[in-house]
Length: 408
Ligand SMILES: *Cc1c(COP(=O)(O)O)cnc(C)c1O
Image (cartoon, rainbow, N blue to C red; front, side):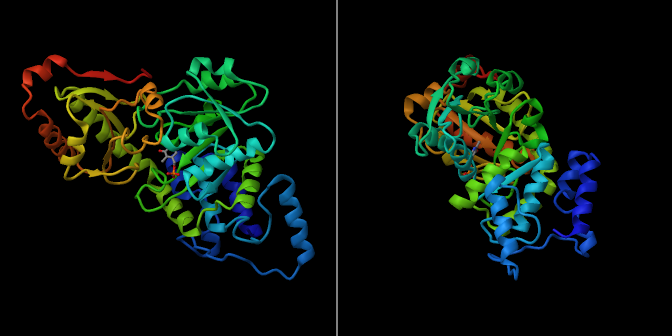
């Protein structure tokens, strides 16, 4: 970064701006001074330097604390200017000093686990449910970590001298169960709390304000927002970010610059997308909760665009019957997606663990997009209608619809 852009960056940092403003300006503060409007995409993998003594000093400094080297970039695995714009912007939105981007959400989580395991802190305390692959990564111990699964109330008692991380999702994938992050952060003491904020996004929840030290995103979801970019990011203090950059440099799970560009673009509409989709989701929740074909609806107290519901009949029939809604895993895109967690997103979790975490075989998870509410409802109504075929409607009505927001 040249001195002019550094100045603009510093000025912006000292002037607090609202989330909606940060979403469209953060990571772009130097553009006008450079005579640019859209951010440039830097696809270079390497950068020329005639000063190899200087490069040696910069690489030594990086090896020390993992701070992003000052001056021109060195090599793509050490950092990329386009990706750095996204990191700067996400850090501003989450209210952290730094953010470190990775090739996927799982690469980001892997880097956190490796950063802790590399200093001997191999034990993780975690609360179910987590995203299926996060659960699997911890349960299988693929990175040499060991996990203890507990309820939120059991976290303090589960901590050991070698505990390097406490990990939670709130609202959780796929049940939308919520955790009191502030109380949990207190229970963690000096052990870093990682909150996966993929579902809430910084628009609805900033976990660092509640005491979490690390905020994880599958940026593949709402941050990208259009179903066309795979990425992960960890927002945290600069000290932890340094460790994560060192792990990223050594293990190579870097984000492609084009993905960095798409994510920065995605962030600019994040508040608008999340609020619009959340309003639609809240209305669909009202209609589902009043529908006799639906046994139970899960929706977080903080709102959001994710809905989970259990049907009286066969959930596979709902998946097979949607026409406007896309039957697909993943979430957070402009279009509405529905999937059956027990078959797809959480299939890799052992059946008893999955059920124990509240992921019933009748549960459907829906990511509400930006379509018209009535159009979405008529598609859902049609898909649910297939279910009711042959069922006496009175029977379903007697069952009633339970509405749940808590961690059952
Ligand atoms: C999708 C997801 C992940 C994994 O992210 P990828 O980008 O698919 O690697 C992690 N956490 C949550 C909550 C997710 O939904």
